[in-house]
Image (cartoon, rainbow, N blue to C red; front, side, top):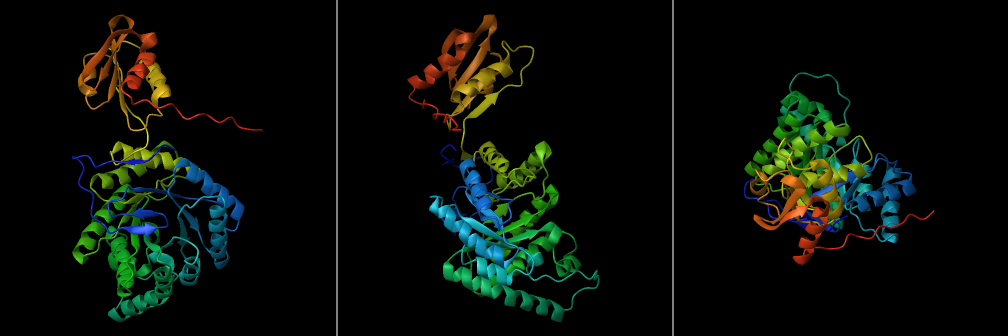
Amino acid sequence: MALLMPTDSPALLTPRRRTRPVRVGKITIGGGHPIVVQSMITEETRNVSACVEAILRLVEAGCELVRVTTPTLNDAHCLGEIKERLLQRGVDIPLVADVHHQGSEIAATVAQFVDKVRINPGLFVYRKPRGRSEEYSEDEVRAERAAIEEALAPVIAVCKRRDIAMRIGVNHGSLSERMLVTYGDTPRGMVESAIEYLQICEQYDYRNLVVSLKASRVPVMVAANRLLVQRMDELGMDYPIHLGVTEAGDGEYARIKSTAGIATLLAEGIGDTIRVSLAEDPVNEISVCYDILQALGLRRTKTEFIACPSCGRTKFDLPKVLAEVKAATSHLTGLNIAVMGCIVNGPGEMADADYGYVGKAGGLISLYRGREMVKSSIPQERGVEELIALIKADGRWVDPPARTTPTS
């Protein structure tokens, strides 16, 4: 994985929302720190060896925080072993325990081993839905809130003692019956569910908190997070937000859905950590996350290529040439390189690029440094070679990493 290089948000993006820094192991979420990329393994937690190997694969792909499901007390203790084995391998990746049904005892136990605990307000104090439609009385609301506080207090105590973080993670599909009856199946219900838990944590002077509101429908996810920011501002809360479109599916459409939700909010200055949830190998999620961040100019982890879509004016096989340029320069993290098919739009459209490769008539190309043409009438077959020579002459070339040969 290339060196991660945070950049300032472009002027056209809304300034990033100010949040408190929340430390999770060796990383910090919020507080102006680079947006954190995370994922979740799919192995059974009791299979410690498989979990360790899955986490190592995510780390190799560039994942910065890993979540592991913790459905039982036995699984909670397994997380301690997973953490220990990773440290023995020299890997100090922050681990998050994912706790759902009847989570108090499990969360309080697993909090002894991990860097962060994620709880789901809709399931943490679980009551089987009764199909109720009438509103809850004030006494019933107080009783339910008291039950939540009783279950949450021991978890808060361990998190405070160990100085670790907690994520209040609300899912649109698992709101409690009380929230559904009170607010309906709406973004407002998601927000109020999170706020209730945040306020209980604040009663115990515990604020190492991250919030997430996830839905499988992009409009619901976007609306919920916008409303969350509004409500937190009203209440003087500055907690960082984790973004994701849950249960997005697989393939191209899942990536489009995730990008539509996550990128929309990031462009509005909302979001401090992200996950793209794919029904695929979790390793596939990492590159999508970094591509979203790079497209918005929020983090740079690879070369940025600019290329025209080609038309009748194009003077060479643009897809073929673009592939050749990418093959030769894709390791140059942080550079912007343009490949343009003709002189008509090339210099203007690639004005933001560090280097430009522009086609001319007669099988020739020109090379640009920014807006300045520095080499002209270069035969196409020598174009990539001359581009590399120009980058080297400017002192911006680095050799690609050596490829390792697999051993049998």
